[in-house]
Length: 577
Image (cartoon, rainbow, N blue to C red):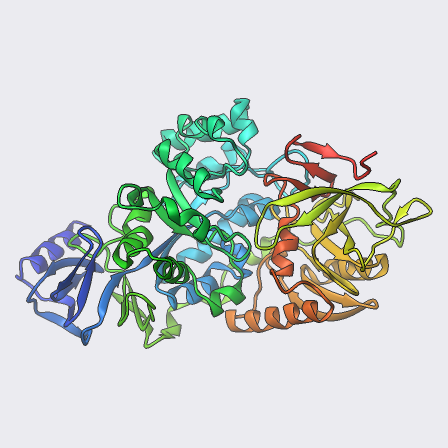
């Protein structure tokens, strides 16, 4: 380190040549929000100066803008359906050079082994992938997860350079009740100098102060301007989310102005591979924000410097002496086409194509073999029978939102068993426990999918990741679940007990061993098959299905233990009578 510092000082002082000099570029200065038409000198992967420098290599930017690499402040890599080494590829193509990830999906499935897998895989990529340790595994006692991560389990990970702190604290009630385990985690992270992310979905403004009191300084669950302002008023960092299901950007943008912007950053949270390929990542959010009227340099500052400062990443988020040389070239700060991308001064994308020899292969991670297999109790033809007296509580999907509605309706029955109704869009939903063969099956009724025939199932179901299935009949639901159990997990479309399309997710039932291009193609075919069977085209059917099990989001959800009411924070009966 000392020799590197000496070299960097010498290069900055022009005593020795820089490794790389970027000439004829327009540098985006996120400190001053100005454009600097000057050259950029890089040594040992760091910026060492502006102006006239000699370099071992010269990059002619040809008048393009040189923009700091984008930062995603909160993402679950597993939700892309890709492992870190494939996720890095698609992210870098979109100018995202840094992500702060919460691996609580694989943590809920595989515990410490899952965390080790994600961290080691991330280290092998030419990208900055930082980890926040899962705070809530399991999330609540009302579902069955594959593992438990205590403060003692998490402690050894804090020695990892890439670990920054404690990920989104989702169990607000545990904090409010000062439960020993969550207090132990918060205290340990504070003592280690880490940061703590929040998750305050559905929490009233007057109750929110508990989080910053506990040094929980961020939140990504604001869904409107009022909630966003409440977080800013408390001195929290406001994470503005635009993912595949949760799309909050346009509702929150009205609170972003010259006075508030420095406490705001962008996150994707959960975004599937098809949207990453077709839309992009943080670059997509920037385009939307700029199109909605946000000044481009202010938006870029939010996507770079603000995110870095939020997580105390003192050498990331800007292009200035002493900062890591992460940047991309573009010729338009509004539409943001991304041509060349550099991380630590090394080119990783050249003319919109990856420098592929920088990436590991899926099979190179030995921890892959240590991840657990599916373990569910045998199912029978009566496993999905749902007794109902008539008036029932129904989960109603809100398109492109994690929030659901609870509605009451009289539903069709036969011999006091619920019968799905295509005409009324009342479908059956079930969650099958798949970690410990408990035999747990949660059953409910859902409205909004508009499926006309067959069944959809996935082993991605937040956050405990049991198998969730929705269908028009029990036979297809049974066939779909059994097929996923046989094949180690994935997503599937079934009709008349036949597999129509399937995307295998062999890594913990969450991520694909296929390359990102093939995973994308298989997911598109799967989604098309779901739409062909009538699934609504207003939202992503599989990602929406996977979030109907997320009990820490209002209002009515379902777990392997049954229907769950967020307002009561307790399991509830399907019968409303």
